Length: 421
Image (cartoon, rainbow, N blue to C red; front, top):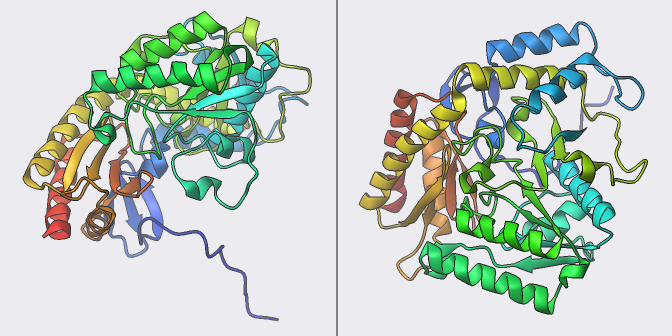
């Protein structure tokens, strides 16, 4: 028999050197049983921590009864129960759901719905956006050329507007909002006529683009323009939803109601599940046959999502994300104050980042990379983001405690000091 010769694609690169053997709460353990504080949460996925007992029990119970009930062939109770339960946390008036597996699939489903419902073809996105890697989702993504390069031509009908990234522009938040809304209106006058615009897609906080929150005034301005011109406002809550920002939905900080909500990541504590949600009057405009899929709404994932919602409510995890987020932000600000290489600390709730910049204001990518690597060596797992990879982000599970926050900040301070000395 030939020796095994298959291996993972050489293009796949690990952010940390850890070979995970098990996870428990906020910690990951490697095969030597070394413990790491996991402030990546699987890129914001393990919202209730690794292997929360309630989620594990729900998934194990479901595996023993029905693993897969394809939901356009047969219906199953976990899907119906999850849909009913989500109705208690979705924005008022948004009462119809369609399930798929990943954030990219949900983004594409939202785009399909928006085009069919409005009879218009164009979508507007924002500089720094990340909406996925599949072809349409990649066409909506501008967080970095690595998502778009070498696969063109991309899907037509996408216009890109400035995002109010105040730190990058050297503006106050109010100035950045005024600038971005003015440029959005200019785009409507020069690139995508309102009569041709089906939807605006926006993340409440830029994810891969650098963890930049959308100021409430900006989201309010987009809501007003969507109402005025008749296009849809689509909130990509893949990373910001389910309590991550200290509110249940990221757009709750602005007090607006979107037309379509996209959710994934923290929805099922690590099981693949995503969804789009919209009002009945909008969802029924989808064309027959336009919604479907083999694995969408998987029974085990739905059972895990139900348990996730119970844990979030019972353990007050949205409130904990707000409190612990304030504590983490204060700690990151102290580290930044001591190290000029960090030019900005920002984010919402437990979705926070530190941007490294050189004295001339250019991206300090090497310093960010070194700090990220040293933190991993010292037992703290983090991720980088931003077009230049000069932003280090922290996304701990929502169950994180004050003691774990303080331990992470201590390691981070040490890593930054070594990386910038």
